[in-house]
Amino acid sequence: MTAIESTASQIAKLAQVWDFVEEKDKQDVLNILRYDLPRWTPIVGAQQEAYDSEADILYFGGAAGGSKSDLLLGLALNRHQKSIIFRREATQTVALVDRLAEILGTREGWNGQHLIWRIPRGQIEFGSCQNLGDEQKWQGRPHDLLAFDEITHFLEIQFRFLTTWLRSTNPQQRCRIVCTGNPPTTEEGRWVIQYWRPWLDDHYPNPAKPGELRWFTTVDGKDVEVKDGQPFTHNGVLLKPLSRTFIPSKVQDNPFLMGTNYEATLQALPEPLRSQMLQGDFKAGMEDSVWQVIPTGWVDAAMKRWVPEGKKGKMDAAGVDVARGGKDKTIVATRYGMWFDQFKTFPGTATPDGPSVAGIVVSVIRDGAPVHVDVIGPGGSVVDHLRGANVHTVDINGAEAPPPGAVDRATGRLKFKNMRAWLWWKMREALDPKLGENLALPVDSELKADLCSALWKMTTTGIQIESKEDIIKRLGRSPDKGDAAVYCLVDTPKRHPSYDNWRDRAKRGTWRTA
Image 1: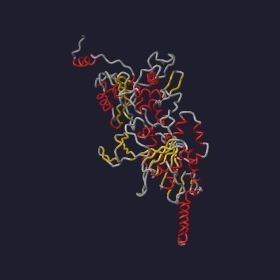
Image 2: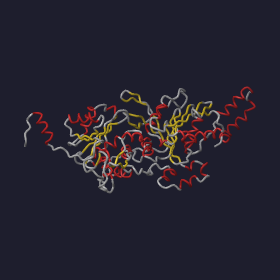
Image 3: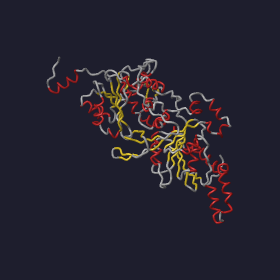
Image 4: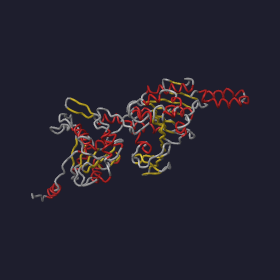
């Protein structure tokens, strides 16, 4: 929509009173007309609903061509004083700048060196975060509109860090976060489904309607839905919930594209890309990398097999991934046969050392189940304390060589570079519909993302799984639940029941053979 079209009604009203404006004030009025009258108006329908939404955090997303990027520019022009619009790569902001020039009919106020467009009521800034860590350069730079174009291209850790700087020095200025984007096409973008679960996740127990407000806050490191936006105190800390919503967009909402062949172009795309881009279907399958260790469909099938009553018999094994500090979590996975219980999650702040982790594990373990712990890093102390508590503990050192003769089950010829590769491949084989063990995994979007995150390659010494550090760079967080599941699958025979009694008697000096 052009500047003339968007301001026609305001100009008409001004013309009716122009003769009554004093000469000394006419230049000021002309300046207002030039800069401050709305030069962009929303399209009636979904875009208008998103424009007027009261949500603190809005996701306007779905199909391609739904006027999503235009919404961000319109809000920055008409509703906010200090805005920033992010794209993952800096070069991707060029189209946004060109579109803003088209709306304004001028490039006056644009500073290409600093990527800031200054208008009398404030400024519109354009930013990027191509690599993990780039978000740090925006620390301490508040904005009252934080906008993310193509939010699924960002890592969750980048989004959460940047949104901490939403604020304004003007108490009359509304602050909000607005995201746009198509459904995710990679595992790295799947976090948006978790973040907006009431609208996008079929497994959410209390689904929300499009545009409906829901309130969330962070309690003990986890997103929690609460009944309203009233502040409350938790462990002595005042928490202020923020409202979220999701409003779907589709190409049919954009009358400027409906007269072109754009919809026909989307119709011609292959599935599942067609459903994602044309219909905005967040449930359409994403294409796995050919080097993905565990196909997404196999994990989906394992989660469909899971039922709460599947917990039968005695606990057979546990896997522990110990937090390495920061925002990492300590995860305890437990297994009964091929049925995995819901994972126990503890924030790193609650497990700062070996004794604290060991205490948690001891409270979870049953039936003499062996506990498999990553011994590298902080796991070493955990192993020591568990053994001190007489818990059957097994070291997992991913850098060690795999067992002698370890090969894949499908061909019997593929070898493995190290223990980590062999263990992850065993999880792949257990989930393989042709080779598998009918594993039942709890429905957990984070676990699914973790298991589907690892990539592999063939080396001269065998299959190699990418390092945990490399996964963190791509995923934006540590795949803690995935690692815990892999450790939990290790099939370690339980110690003989008399073993513990023997140790007790030996300590008392009363041990004797049967």
